[in-house]
View 1 (cartoon, rainbow over the protein chains, first blue to last red):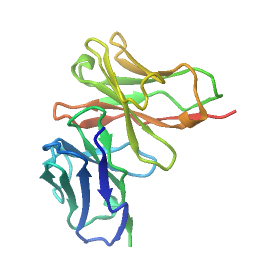
View 2 (cartoon, rainbow over the protein chains, first blue to last red):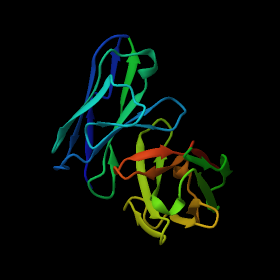
View 3 (cartoon, rainbow over the protein chains, first blue to last red):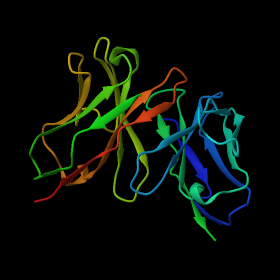
Length: 107
Length: 118
């Protein structure tokens, strides 16, 4: 199985901050990397696919980058509705695997 | 509008069987794979497996192979996740999700809470 490791596990930030979450794959997955946002008690929401492509309707303050084994999710100008847990997921090979999540909390 | 609507919360005893469902609407059921994802209390997301509704071909994570069964019924646009013998460790929220042409999970069900307790 491909292991996905996110860092940090949690972070505290203020509205307006720029936030970066890192995801590392245990082997090269090309650009087969997706990001999701999950708010408490809700289903995950797709944010970014193929490492850097924004899902329809997702605000442009979200961006993704990377390829191979190292990937980044960046939220610029953090908004109150962005406080949530973020997961990366590789779609390179089954079993598809998720990172352990990064919780973005209000400072 | 694409929708995945899951069956309601369940409370079961260890050893009992259970089947939960995911009914889709707003698109052709046979066009996209349906996946199942587990989230144990306070934990992250784990992919269980997927089904291609065109031919009911399934793939499972080794972690779940043999413990659950995924199926689909095209006549009612519904996918299922089934256990023949539940364990307390199966207590979790289970999500269904559609795999898009971009290989991500673009639409999700609302989740089904399964509680297994004696």
